Amino acid sequence: MSEKKISRRKYLAIAGGAVAVAAVGGAAYYLGMGGPGAGKRPVKIGIAAGLTGRRSGVGVDSRDAVLLAIKEINEAGGILGHPVEPVVEDTVDQEAGMITSVFLKLIEREGVDGIIAHWGNNSCAEFDIVQEKKIPYISAGAANQVEAVITPNPDAYSYIYMAVPSYKLYGTIFPEYISILEKEGKYKPINHKIAMISRAFEYSIFITEGLTKTFTDMGWEISIKEHLPSAKVEDWSSVLSKIRSDPPALIISTMTDPASDHLLLKQFLEDPTPSLLYEQASPNDPEFREMAGNDADGIVHVYGIQKIPTDHPYRVKYQENFGRDPSPYGIISYDQMMMMKIAMENAGDPFNREAVAKALLNIDYKGVMGRFVIDPKTHLPKGGGEFMPFPVYQMWNQENMMLYPFEVAEQEFKYPHWYQKALTK
Image (cartoon, rainbow, N blue to C red; front, top):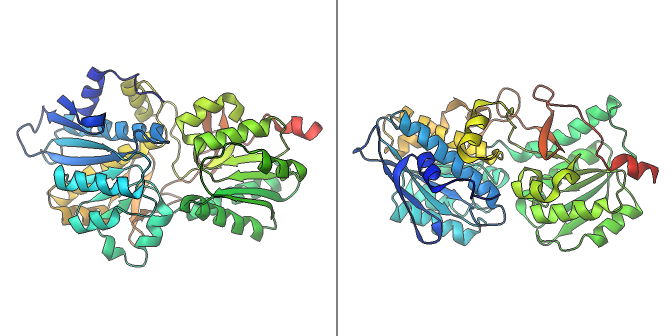
């Protein structure tokens, strides 16, 4: 995804300021605030986003969503009369050293009053810094690690909150949906075998373990198990050779790397098996959709962020402002900023960090992506039902279409384009 679609003038308008000065490398922006609240002490919000890493499309979308929210907040008079000033920093690939450096800079050098990140470090390296410095922090990634860290002692992480629900649902929603399809005769698997592909990465391992347990409890067999050392795969021939020699009904990749997952799809399509292909997270990346095009038609996956309709007012205004459709993080990061705003208002003082943190714990906010109510045991929003949906998706025409839960479904399941060809060969 290119940022060239946004002119400098338009970028400044979105950010809500009259003047912006880019720091070295273009990683941070300091905006002079005008309009309502001008002259008052600004509320400084740190935006930690991977703008140049391997998932930069998601990072750019996240940053722009926060800036859009800030623009609207400032146009409406700011937070309790104080203008909001964004400070953007590039976290690249969210590695521990980079995350630590960025968060220290935002807190100690920039003096931010709160931090928003689309994805923190997978080992939660930033947590101790945020808690020690008493900075309200909202993240939207690595929920499995966050849950594991916070649950034993929630009070020890009183400044840290999430905008995505527990990843435990990743292990149950897709098997539940497959079971319903099979019972209703809408999907007839060739067998009950699964080729499970994962990598040495907590997110991947957590989802793989959850899916493995649920499917095996249902009577399915993990006939092929590939656990790879890294996200980068240059050739899938050896893995695909095993799959073609004993075709499974499901091929599940939790690699979450757009380039590697695209290569898996590309090489798979050279000689496909009558299998459904599930690729975790990658179908939501703009890079994956650009690389795969309509070859990805039929890929299924689960994502803990629901899609909003094409004509939804937020989606329309995002397109108008940035010239592109938002990825899920181009939506949920808007909600993150609005959660911070509401918490600061409910606290009665945006600079009373302890009060803001307590307000986040007690928030009940109906956002673009769903209803955000925090579970005090995990500091994650509640998922499912009336709270945050956890949909099953299928790709068609480079769009992710919701299939399940049925209350939010946009279409019914369809066999992928390679399926019949594979059955008849």
